[in-house]
Amino acid sequence: MLQIFVDPSARQGDLLTVQGSEYNHIRNVLRMKPGEEVSVRFAEDPDEYRYGIESFSEDAVLLRLRFVKSADAELPVRVYLFQGLPKSDKMELIVQKAVELGACRIIPVETSRSVVKLDEKRAEKKAARWQTIAESAASQSHRGALPQVMPVMSFKEALELAKKECGVRLIPYELQEPGKTRGILDQIKPGDSVAVFIGPEGGFEPGEVEAAKEAGFVPISLGRRILRTETAGLAFLSFMIYCLEL
Image (tube, rainbow, N blue to C red; front, side):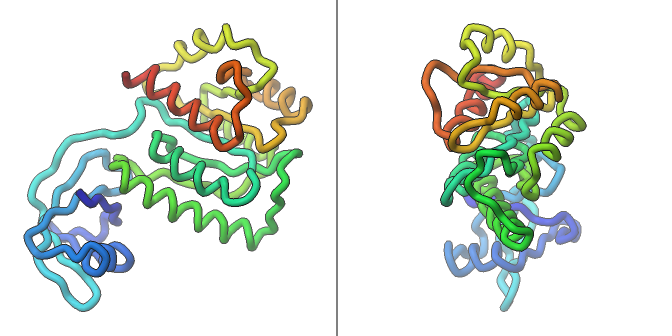
């Protein structure tokens, strides 16, 4: 079933007016007809709203509420994925899969070993593209909330954000012994906000790891193999699903 995210201001009682790209997707891509059903999510509301298509106009589709389903597809914890900027289009894959696996925020970070360097204009354009991918992935995976891709940050800015918003702060590091990781993850409880810091290709410089430790980050291992930057964050999110949902 199609799921879309809609601004709550579009509601008028039991009626909902949908325009723009979502209207185009419903009418011209999926060629849906009056009577068919759409799943709708509103910002900051975990419930699922089922609407039936009433009618189409030239630039909008009118939906009528059928029922509300209490369903929360969110992880029990809020995971902030701090991702060192990777090369090529890897960030698009990371955003898409991280949203599917439950990340609530994705923060691109320029680190010392980041090959990609973005000026302000390119960074804004990339962030808008990544947010579009996040919204599409959230709809496809029936997320209960719309994840946010934040603007590109410096390493220092990212550490400050993590200290401010996340009580649990973790940094996967290849020199960390695997044996202690299970105990660290077992201490994470529902309701926690968790920051995980993933390095780019080439990993972190030792000075960055030390700065992260000083900011309250705890080194963990993701296993005995060296993971690519586009794999590491997804592996961590999978750990969270296993530890807290399964």
